[in-house]
Length: 141
Figure (spheres, one colour):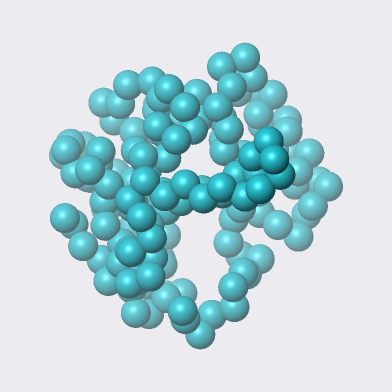
């Protein structure tokens, strides 16, 4: 799809889960262990139970899928999990079209709120994705 390698070690690996009985502190300890055991990767472990706090005017999430549907960008709302049959399942609530077309657009959740859209814009400016992928198209709709 691009001239970039499929994976680089500058990119973080996001691992999400939803467990109301797993504390924020336990999540940080587990993330620390992942970083110690596999230091070649930049791990980010997030219990989605707490992540609504990072998005203005957002109710508690009810599941990992609910949380993903409320991510800032449609192209980042993509997940892969290993199911009970040891098969991979892809979850992409907004499809893969934005990824395939190198588009970055806000999710409906972010579009419906001015404070969230401000957060979206700030996030885009900090990510510097355009430097890594020159052909990205940014949209605010």
